[in-house]
Length: 221
Image (cartoon, rainbow, N blue to C red; front, top):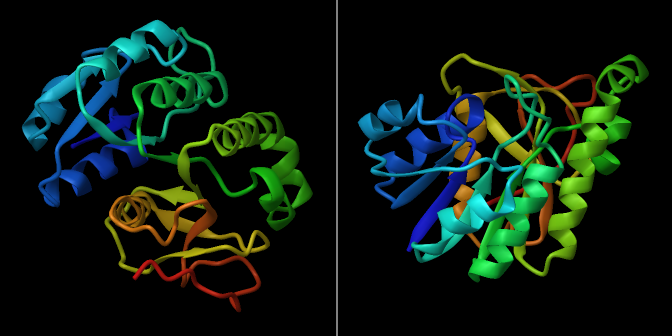
C-alpha cells in the first residue's frame, strides 16, 4: 500500500518525506510543479504526481493509479503566483481521498487553529487570524468527511535538526515551538499507530513551551 504525501517540496512535508523513506515505506508525492521532483527522487521516492491542490480533477487523477492507504497533507501558505490552499486545497484532497477509498488522512495544520486559539496571545491571533480560520475550516471538513483522521497542530517551526524532544498533547491550551524534523517524526509515528485515530493533537518540543509546561503528553505507543 502507498502513502500519498501532499506538500513534500519543502518544510515539514520534505522532512516527512525523509522520515517515511527512512522507514522504507512506499510513498507517492504530490507536487505543484516538477522543480523539486529530482530532489525527492534522490531520497528514493520514485512516484511523483504533478497536481495543483486547487484543481480537484488533478488530485483525483494523481490518486487514481495507486492503492493508497493513507494521505498526509502539509499544504498551505501562499504559493508564488497562486492562491492560498490552506482550506480549499485540503478540502479537495480530503474529497479525493474519500472517492479513492483511502483509509486514513493525517492533516498538519498549526497551533492556534480551532480551539487551540486560546493558547496564543491576542497580537499573534490578530496577525495570523485569517490563516488560522482557513486551517480550522480544513480541519472541520476532514472531521466531517467520514475518513479516519489525525490532525497535528505544530507550534512555531524551526529548521534545526531533530532534538528528539517532540511530543504530542490533546491539551489545546499549550503552545511552544518545535523543529520541523521533530514534527515529521511524530507524523510518521502516527502513520503506523491506531492510537491517534480521530484525535486532534498539538505538537511541540517539551523543552520549548510558552509558559505552562505542565501538561499530559499523548502516548503513541
